[in-house]
Image (cartoon, rainbow, N blue to C red; front, top):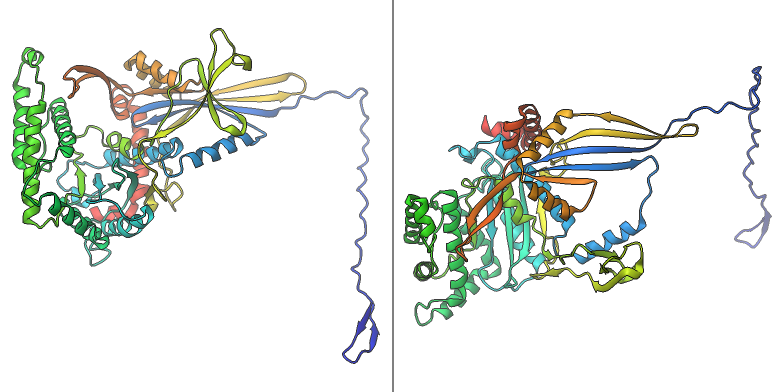
Length: 550
């Protein structure tokens, strides 16, 4: 290679070549003195082909039995990836079925761990985990982007909820664990549901939320609107009356069913309404069964409810005028001590799916039609799904939504509720492996199977529970699931209630807790069940909780 210097001279430079590695000869096979047999003897080989596991999961309100297949050589299904991607895109801004199941698992097991490890009726609840369910709303029309509201309103509110005198000079509620969900109302406004693990004073909560709302002028906009509506004095607002009337009738119906009075925390701004409702509840409790049957006005009738709504609107008007409309009712704290199962009550709010899915008949299926998306196909009478010529009535599979999309994140949680947080346990229901089948491929004897049975005590418990549950309810879920590898046993019993609209009795399935059946049928499994939720409780709160309660 020729190299030129700055004066134009030439210099011959020898190129460097890396030395080549010597080729290593293959090692010779070691010599052996053994005599080979002709022909060779075939030896049996046990190659594990597949493992089949049967598991039983004891969730707080149901039993789930599943069968899983694990092959030694796994393969990824490309179509499942495409379907998953399409599903995520379809539910962008809404809560999908997969997300709903995940949120439900977190909430259900977190709250169950609190229920089983803390006395929620104890008067010393302020220094212990206490489940509180809060709803935060906007008092006027939303004029900001969803993400901006979450950054400017929700984040500061959560920061205040987590504050305590031990952490900062600002005293909040001292919340350790929380989960929130954002959803849009029918009027288009964004609102937030929060589950927190501390008791919260309602007045302080509303005062703080309104203070944060005014940063974006939502209280000022509310004041201007109310002053315009009532510019000529009090007016009865018909657009609100129907919804308020139904709400009152529903509250009375549930109170009569639970045989409990309406607590002082409800209708605090109009105590006269609460007194009338409690008198109706008390009078009904004193009636005989025959008198109740002959009473056409079960609970609260529509006329009385409308009269009470008038009083509530008038009280709200008088309070608004006295405060110059600076304290709108933007928060709602749900009292949970009267609810038989806190986790079941809250879970339906924060994990409900936004979509309305098409209802399929027995002769219908949802199939992927190439790149066109999902379609509903109907099988003609006497036809076979294996024959595409028997398919008819190709209809696009469309999920409808009652409300608008939420921009950005639709839910979130504290770090200690994550399955992967340091030192934590996975927040899930206890699971028991009841049977393992190992299938081997043998060159000589063919495919063989070895069965290992475990936890007979769990299998016996499942069969005992089945005898306690209405068979029709188990069959109903089996038809919905339509799988031979999964069985769900709901825990509960049939009961009756009065529909507050029709005033007629209706049968419904009333949920019961898993621990109720364990106490009755199997105390041994109950011990392991309680230990499991004690582990979850300690993984979430740990030493921090122990120091607070010491």
